[in-house]
Amino acid sequence: MSLLAVRNLTKRFGGNTAVDDISFDLEAGELLALIGPNGAGKSTTFNMMGGQLPASSGSVRFDGRELLGMPSRRIAHQGIGRTFQIAATFASFTVLENVQMALLSHHRQVYSFWRPAIGRHRDEALRLLEQVGMGSQAGRPCSELAYGDVKRVELAMSLAGKPRLLLMDEPTAGMAPAERNALVALVKSLVLQNDMAVLFTEHSMDVVFAYADRIIVLARGQLIAQGSAQQIRAHPKVQEVYFGT
Ligand code: ADP
Ligand code: MG
Image 1: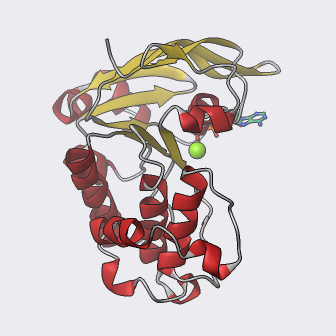
Image 2: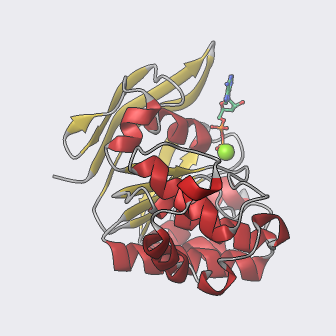
């Protein structure tokens, strides 16, 4: 049985079918890329899986359990983490404090802005920051960080929830090409180290082809291809969508 099984997932907005009867699987330990032109239905798919948006029909089973219909908080507690495009860090708090707050939240302890309460889970927070290459910046306020480093802190915060599956919608949005590469390379190494699966969207085909274990292509809500980088590169429908040939 696969870790995640999406079957006939559909979302209609009035007369517009944003996600049209898509089915795919995701295995434990896999880095799976969801690609497609703007408006293809990628974010809508993430939002249904994360419980932010109700599906029109279909099924999303995680470890055999149906996620559709669950509130987003309960989905998170199944072991599904989510990163968002907008920065989720608290600028005036340090890098370390932000990760400590994420750990407090995961342990369902009082989520407090009172600094002494934040001071728990220090070792665990430092360990997570080491994993994302931010150990040396633990004491800096997030407001001082470069954009790419904020993204690394957010990643450490997502790991605080010990996700078995991490959903990342455009994690490299707004980044320069070198930063994009570095972030996705980091995500790939975390997948290998943490026995975690990741579903992510990414605009750069170079990055997707370099790091994804498998690729799913959406166009106008439909799943038009899935397979390895080699298979996707050569796929006639993908060429049509991306290159108009
Ligand atoms: P992508 O993330 O692949 O760029 P989206 O999932 O954001 O695509 O959008 C897919 C389609 O659904 C688009 O046609 C978009 O206009 C439409 N859509 C997305 N969200 C809504 C919404 N809340 N209400 C109505 N239409 C929406
Ligand atoms: Mg989107």
